[in-house]
Figure 1 (cartoon, rainbow, N blue to C red):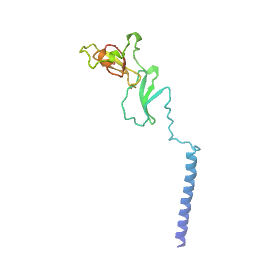
Figure 2: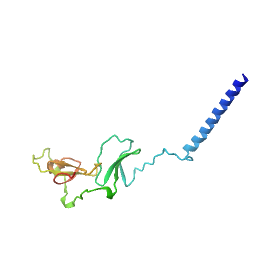
Figure 3: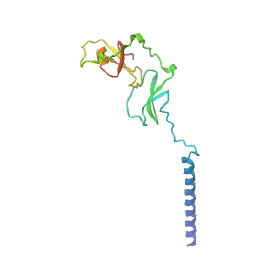
Figure 4: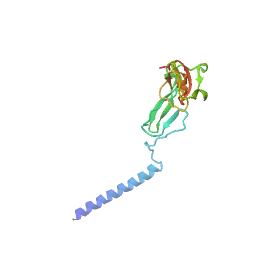
Length: 159
């Protein structure tokens, strides 16, 4: 019987010591004295990244503008600037070839059935994952009837 009491006393002492150790560790961990590897620093105001969604595993599809590429991280997902050396052969769009959609070009409910393809380039409200941040339309009227198109250029969009 004396042995059983001694074993119970030892087990109680060990449990008490573990609780004390855990309490001290938790206090140090949560006040920042012990480095935490699970803390993720999410810089949502970064000049190099634009977040589309602030949730992990980003369950949405989106497109990024030229010069940027999509990313996913524990902080969310969005578009980040890419190094110019990796951009490849993305042609610059000459300002003189841009035809901006104005309120008058967005009027009406129908467009003429003329096939003269144009590339409708999306404005800043659309985040593109891949180049081009645009879509080919049958004509300029169709392009400008899409509220997301900022301007159009002659011909089909580059691939």
